[in-house]
Image (cartoon, rainbow, N blue to C red; front, top):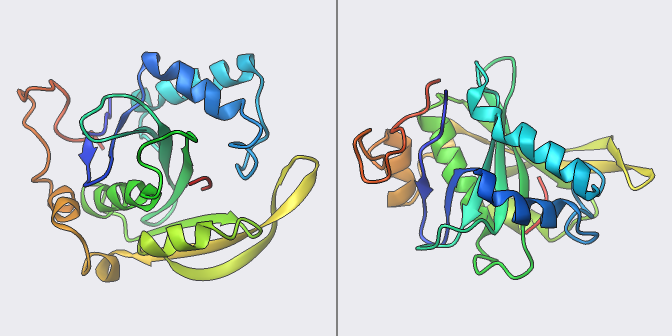
Length: 217
């Protein structure tokens, strides 16, 4: 197994998905507005349940390439959104994915922090060199989220994915480890260097280390 440890920031924290997260996951992926800018079409309940089962299986794959995590408010173990990281098959690259929050999520306005926590883990424990992300070119509000996460604009990929009956351009951003890690918070630095994680015998009982890409706001 390759479970990620809990990643705690100032305004939110990330953890692995659990079976009890099905309801909020299904709510997100069957919602007409929350799926508007996703890279996949809106699902029906059965499709969302099947997708959720695939996400739950991620920690049991080797090598693990997909990491879809639950976004939770500070002090509350309840899923209010998702954040993901897709490890690419070449080089030391990965893509931030699956960023979406429920409309009533108390962490709204801090979505960039979810990306930053995963980037700290990726640049640190996973040894990545480059992390990138993208949003539909017409989803203009995502630009400030990308910049706040420390990602820099790169390019526009024309007609990258097809949803809602049409092709969509995607604006991309990226960060490189040597540059991004110069300006990080103490919490992000602790994740980067692995000092934020409890020992295997810690109170949560979660593994201390792992064994080993975006829309919404």
